Length: 295
Image 1 (cartoon, helix red, strand yellow):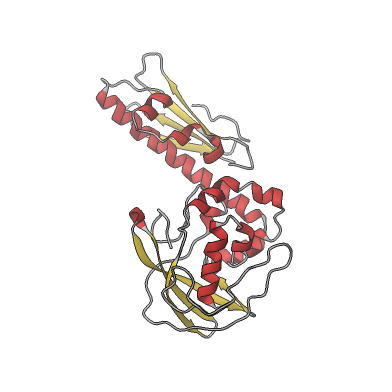
Image 2: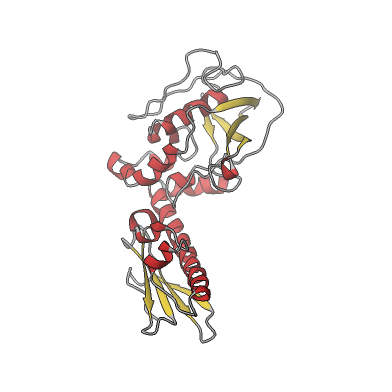
């Protein structure tokens, strides 16, 4: 399943809980059904399940209560209704959210709110294959360029419930080890990766601007106004980083920095973009306690 990202369900965003919701995508050819009993998770995350075997809205097959297809349906329903804890309890990301308090879960509210907005009102489920303790459910979901395509969701049985496999075995082992710290680590890693990419984008934007302006470079606001940089470069709330472009007096050269907005929470590594004598750009990085990395 993918929503605007690659061939996987990597529902938007910048590196946190939302970015971790990954389910690979392709098609299935057969349809079967299985009946299980979805036990509600402990705590305040009770899972609502279908009470009848009639096809749900958007479904093209008969959905067995508590079966794999029903689990997928409920998963998307919870996401769309912003019941994120309940939704993630249906996936193998559960160990990463079980220990999060409501206040800690709220730290990811920006990503998750965007996530909810990507979910269609109805999910067209059109296939279910069950083979022992494994199952594949196919659904027609937005893919690349917002075009709907058949995608598959892999599930495994765990006791009496079906669990959506959003990450592979290696990642699942890491999640179990890191527990509730996993999403914080993931957010930091993703923010750092995107900070480096943003500085590389700054380099390309300045190059394009200089070609059109006699070799001159410019500041962030002008690059945004020219459509060469995205608006969110100015929002540390969404990027986790503070960006700065420093121009020389003649506006013929510059250097740029990316610094964690909150060291240890939104990022750990500071980045610096500089130009060599030939005008070629280079991005360097260092964990310097959250300070601006100077040339």
